[in-house]
Image (cartoon, chains in turn purple, yellow):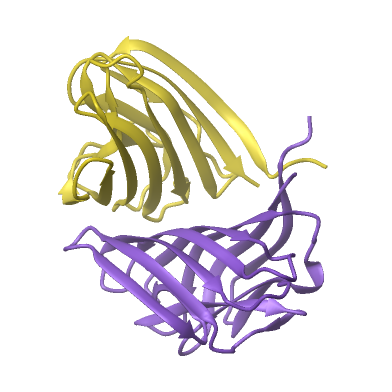
Length: 173
Length: 170
């Protein structure tokens, strides 16, 4: 029996890059729901943040149309709420450059192929932070532009990505 | 087309207070999905998680941190925060005093086999206090730079009957 989670694209970063695109020319529009796995993502520069933008016709969309709301589950203090509307990107999680500073995540992408709907995401990060603490972020986000998207782009708010495995899967219909 | 989530192992235990799943993590995969559905306990009990290293030792030192949110159907949500403890206490909650009170947990385990910290996240749907639905969202870490090859589960009270399935992301 064939499986239901189909790998579409994967980028393995082992040296500094400015950004990672999943999809784009490799996008397969035959799925309704997509899964993105991030594993061991690290930054060149300490105390920075991993960001996400959706791809429109393979280009990252930086218009101010990103909304998100999330709960931060901290193993070091009271949990927090993060939210904003009309951002120019989605702030995913803090990153660092020590060997233990890693961002890991499971994201779902919804409605990316629907030209009359917004593009939606949910995510649960599991991170060991640059300040040596464990935390997770559980949230949802939307890009409020009713047009088709064909992937996502990850980048660091200041500096480059130094390491990590970025994988895009389609969930078979 | 072959799928990218590959079944590795399924292990069933019945009426025990602890059990292990050995040799489920290897160099073949970096990220794993653990499915623990229909976890039936003899009373209201947590199913706790410890990891097993490549020497076969159950790691019970105070090297686990975790944080989770109990999303209660009947009350204000509860934050649970633990640092430097000897297990992931809240992996699952089941209520065996109630017919239909089985718990269910889905977890993602990151990089257990390589010699870096092992991170995990989990989500669960459970019953507590014999009546109320509760969801769980949690994250944790084992702060040991050691190769992990298995998992050990134990209840905080009573016994458990469960089947745990492990998958690898290709």
